[in-house]
Length: 360
Image (cartoon, rainbow, N blue to C red; front, side, top):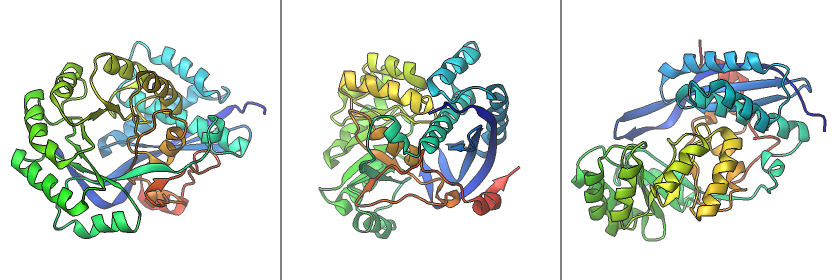
């Protein structure tokens, strides 16, 4: 196969509607601010990827940055490892965190999508794997066991999810305990329950809360303290009887190497748009395998289904659907699992919906 060359890069900002708002310790996410990336090639194929910007304030800077980087990529072969090496040199002095890291990661996913489309195969096949069902969990914001009973039962009965994640830290310990106790009673003993604090606690408070919540059979406690506080994570982990999960806010493979060396967590969950895309994920998957650490995904379920299928310590795939409103083929959850689709990453924009939700 002749290696394709990049002929152009474009980015568009959209704000998608959500089926349900996501309340966490710091507020409410009531829409999906996304950046859609398109990388055109000289073989007539366009690679697609998207980024979740968290806030509308980041949309225009991300679009501009991606297109500016793209101007320098025109004429370069679509070779993800070499392109990432080149971009590393380009941004070494500036650093890879923040918008730069997201832009580089998003472009990497689009490169792999283009290669998959040209080969006529899902990306998981290019990585040496097979598109197999990956166990998934349904991800929510703060839940109310009473008012959310119907939607939770629908998730478990109709979609077959065997794991649910909720948010904590939005109130005091008694608030967290009341929610977790009610959810465990509603879900029963056979559905796994995860609790995400979104970096909202200090180590002492995290230890105190986890001790109270541990009897409710939690699968993990996620990001109990600020993500950069690796020693704090290690301290909490040492005192916790519930496994600690973290990683969605650690940047690129080096960030995971430092966290693993610090003993910061029991499980890891890279975010494809912060870990360096698919190229960065593969590096971290090797680290997780060497350290025997179960590895899950954070958001971006469509692409995550491809990389988790080739991750030796694959654990759980997070289902949080920000892009369904602008995709021609939204997610298909079958018996609580998600299977990678192709060709490429299986992303096809619904252009009429994109036009409806696009902002300029």
